[in-house]
Amino acid sequence: MERVFLEKIFKLGRVPGGLLFYGKEGSGKTKTALDFSKGLLCQNKITWGCGECPSCRYISEFTDKFFKEEIEDLKVYEDKDGKKQFVYLMGEHPDFIMVIPHGNYIKIDQIRKVKEFAHIKPALSKRKVIIVDDAHTMTNQSANAILKVLEEPPPDTTFILTTNKRSAILPTILSRTFQVEFKGFSVPEIKKLAGVDEVLARLSGGSLKKAILLKENRKLVEKVTNFLKNDPLEVFKIATEFEKWDTDKQRLFLDLLEHFLTEKALKDRENVEQYSSILDKIRIFKEGIPRGINGGLWLVHISSQLSS
Ligand SMILES: [Zn+2]
Image (cartoon, rainbow, N blue to C red; front, side):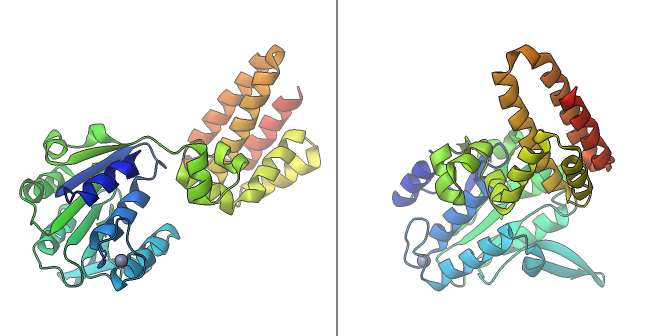
């Protein structure tokens, strides 16, 4: 697994100046990048961090805030022509920054600031770490600018790029970074890392992100089970609630519905056609979510298919 490999290069003191973590969404790239940064910056030089030194504490705080989506607290702006412009995320640690897309892209102005940061001396730790999250969102200009630093990274700076679209990364960047593939998590790993039970771990399908979302929305599993009982009053109640949920929660509900229906279809082979037509509808439904379709109505429609 990825972690074992990272541990090895850490212990051998062979961490390259540029790493690229790639793999599907929810396979733990960003979490591992943050954990590995903790170790790289740890004042006691412990793999994955000692957890006690000021450096480790700052990175832990950053990680907590990042995953709780308290991103506003971490945003650093620069003043440009009297306007505030977002550049990167930074917590209390002076030697650590994380670049995330501004809007849909990582822009050239952001990378210019990153380059400045790469060339200052570390203040607390022995080195600096720069995470570039969703690196495929770099514009061509940004990618070419970062390439120059990756070609000759300052000796005390480590870059960790993450992406779920390796095909969208410039080949020149691929050749300048050491690539580590993330294959997703096994059920026991999910149980341990997300602190969930066997059922939720299986439902997450190897995605840490989804497991955490499921843990926060445990009641959703219950709602899906109730929905499938197809009692008209209950369906109506759920359909009304559904419209008030945010899109992540709506999507999670539909993922779960899809999962349970697929299981039913596997057991009930005689009605497989009926199930596959409902499953198709759910997929169309999911695609419509970002466009703001009337979700409640769709759910009632799907439930009517269940009974026929
Ligand atoms: Zn430490």
